[in-house]
Structures are given as C-alpha cells and as structure tokens.
Amino acid sequence: HLGESPEQAVLRLLTEFNGGRFTPAQFITYTNNLFDQNTHSLTLYFVTECIDGDQLDLMQSSRCSDWFWADWSSLPQPLFLPLELLRQTGFRP
Image: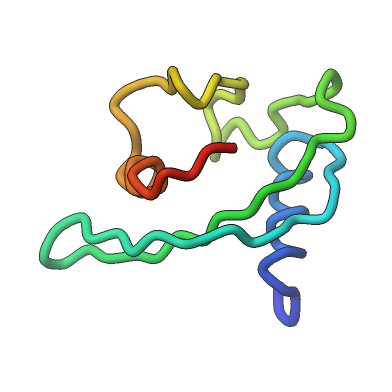
C-alpha cells in the first residue's frame, strides 16, 4: 500500500493471510535471488512473534494453499530458492 513501510507491509500481509496478531516486525537480512538469466528478485526477511498462534486461519486460499509450522532444521524439500539462500547465510530463527 502506498506509503507503508516494509515492516508495516509484513504485518498487514501476515494478518491478511492468516488473521493472526504479531509483534512489530524487525528486518534481519535480504537475499539476492538469481533464478536464471532473465529472472531476478530480492527478498527481504523479517522476524516477528505470533501473539495468538493457536487462532491462525488460512484467509486467502486462492493465493496460499497451505499454512503450517515447520522446524527450521527439517523444512519441507525442495526449498524455494530465496529460502535456500537464507539458510546458506547461517541464519537460525
């Protein structure tokens, strides 16, 4: 949305996707994602805590097919490239 900060966008999108409430988002890092010669993106990563994790719901099933918690050390494979690049940085939540 026009004028919102990245931190505000994170909280808005989390709420839109699952209806939860979260602590303020804090920027941690970014990845530079080169998928192929024609496809490139940057991904910004933030951390936040879910205040009401037992009440999460899948709010936008047309944009997100599933929502679940996974242990960082046993994430489902294969990983989306940006998430794999984040793991390669040594980041551990």
